[in-house]
Image (cartoon, rainbow, N blue to C red; front, side, top):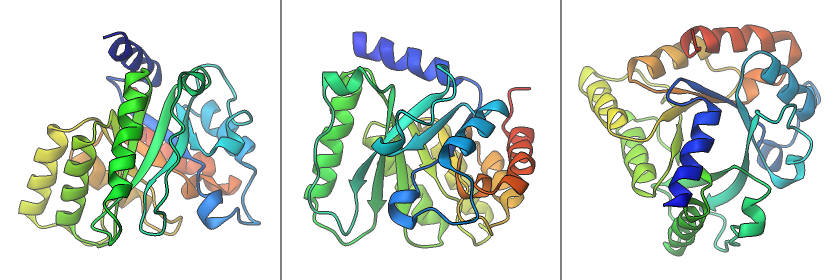
Length: 242
């Protein structure tokens, strides 16, 4: 299908089959921007110059954070969340002419009406039919590796091209690690989320590499300029193209 060719071409431009590293700039809608951080435009430009391949943002930043035509931008479409019972289908041919990729957040194991997931699934299928790359952000509430594994399976079954998944704070058992490795090996390329800026990024990256993840999707660790270069260098030392 033509849409499959378009999606594969977009994935290749992002860097597959090599590592994919993205900067997440979609925090403003839920967390606001902190007074200590640089502007999203500055963060995106610096990350691009240091080898990050793309960014995730909401529509208000879509036109302002693309420092280069080869810097991929994922437009974040809110997926299935406990507080949001109404979804607007934004996928159309006109939309596809403006964006290469979309990001959809899905809350797994949350108490919400099932219609959220149905609408999210329709959004993903519409995007795939138009040849857009779909990143599913597989969110889960607990700090258990079993929850991470279930969320990953769910995201893959929705038709994701890429999956963003966080690493739980607890240390996994050997069997939990093997299970996650097995699922990742049979899933679309999985990117590790960075989480809060206070989280040990080196530990997160080490676990992500150990279980076979293919890259990163990190926001808050990059936001403040005095640590940005250090954090990007750390990411690229684990998930670089060399």
